[in-house]
Image (cartoon, rainbow, N blue to C red):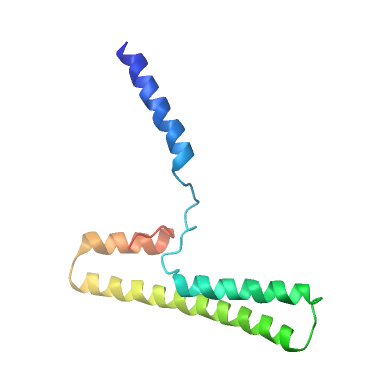
Length: 118
């Protein structure tokens, strides 16, 4: 009786977890992503769609607008990622200087494993 009830509870938890808990691969969520990058991404996508609608011209205002939006988006990603890496490196240095070994190892593991919850 107890085993049957236990199995029903476990089954219900599994079914609900599959239905309501999002699953993502490690590294899918980028801790350095923010709304500004989302806006730049949307602008880049919109500019690319407009460029395609106009027949994919290789010069002119539409082409320049598409290229500038793409470059701005890629440069912002590169800067944000670099800034996040520098921040973690500075944090590692500070934790090591403070001899806070527990948080030092957590931060180092975060930097190495790409799964980060800072």
